[in-house]
Image (cartoon, rainbow, N blue to C red; front, side, top):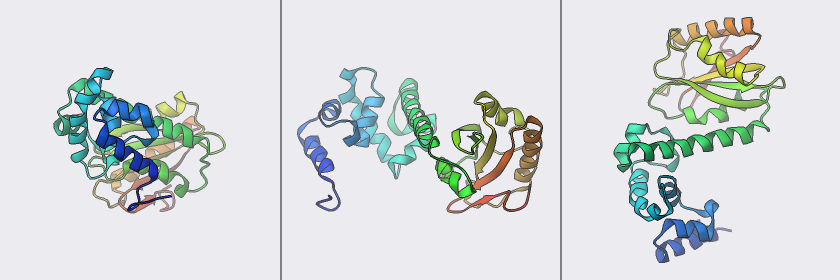
Length: 236
């Protein structure tokens, strides 16, 4: 149960230890990763040796103070990570690698359970697209039973036919043996209304999908808080 303003006993235990133990690594070893604070986890992630962890705590705290929510760290570019924390290029890469590993593991773990019957079934997989400052184009790979295999980012930046081509979109599907795909991208403005370019790119991908026998089931545009399905809108 929760006590003292919503804190669980585990969180209180961690808070008590944080006051008595100055080393993040010691706290994690004694209480475990699942109870660890975001700051302590980051300190370990950016440290190259056990001896470096205590010295990494300040950088971890600076990084967390630069975002409103812990989950916003995943949206920071390498430059933003560097400017917020003072981490060097390799330390930034360690943070990004840890984030990407967690993302891939999460998708793989959920993919066994998600069977897509409607666009709503896959929207939760695309939560990473919400709140981004740049457009990101993703492909969700599905097996023959419409179960999610994985999702990949295939392009970051303005969406145009010349940049988001069939080769980039279908390469992960061919590589992983997907039977069909759903594509998606975000509109940083928050307005999910499809642009003429969105529609042109969609129609081109649908044509190529038919030729490859890897159908494009839908193209979702993610805004905030709304999203749209181009199939439901009648564009294909």
